[in-house]
Image 1 (spheres, rainbow, N blue to C red):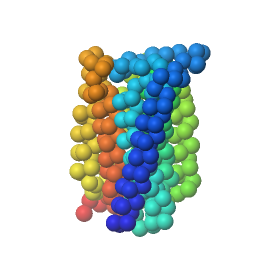
Image 2: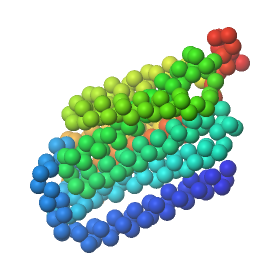
Image 3: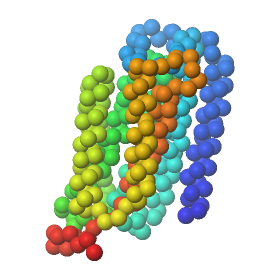
Image 4: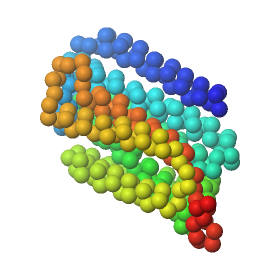
Length: 286
């Protein structure tokens, strides 16, 4: 386990350092290149983000761009979890750990959010805001699909965590179709309504699943996830109304960091679930 912990932290750290080096090289070489001005057919970003935009630079919002590396760090760590689970899933009585495909797509969703948000804040073009929103939707929709799979397992498979290529395949395909439909059609102002609805559906189904079907889980991971999100959301909202665009402290950047930590701890929390035993359709709590 110590070896896994080392790989989980060192490999993402190496990639993060490479990203930082690349970021400063590109920023230095093309700070006044006017790179994005050639994309005249693309509309400016419709959303308001506080940080000052250097329209001549290849990175128009440096702080909001580089703060996304936390998403990359945790995405790579989750992908490492997936690789480890691929060879150890039989010893892990947990739906996420037994179906390593879930960690794979969870990590890929987080990495896609990193790519989308990074390019969006670097360019501040409307077309890349859509990619950013696809990543945000993925981070909510995929846990929702996993939760539905867990409820199906509780209803029809005696609440036993199980490995299933067909089950996870159906869930992942359903996730991709739903992501394409929802994010493709509700990525602008509608997202401010659709995302909270999906979030509360996820919370509601998760509370129901845990109350009736979960025996043990790491409360500290859940508390950390909730705390980070509790502080993250005000940063996003306040940034819309009160800001100093030339400041080296940007609330939207802090939103990126806190949201990444919240998502990561939520993933760790999912990995710790241990189900109640069902006997003849009845729950055995002891």
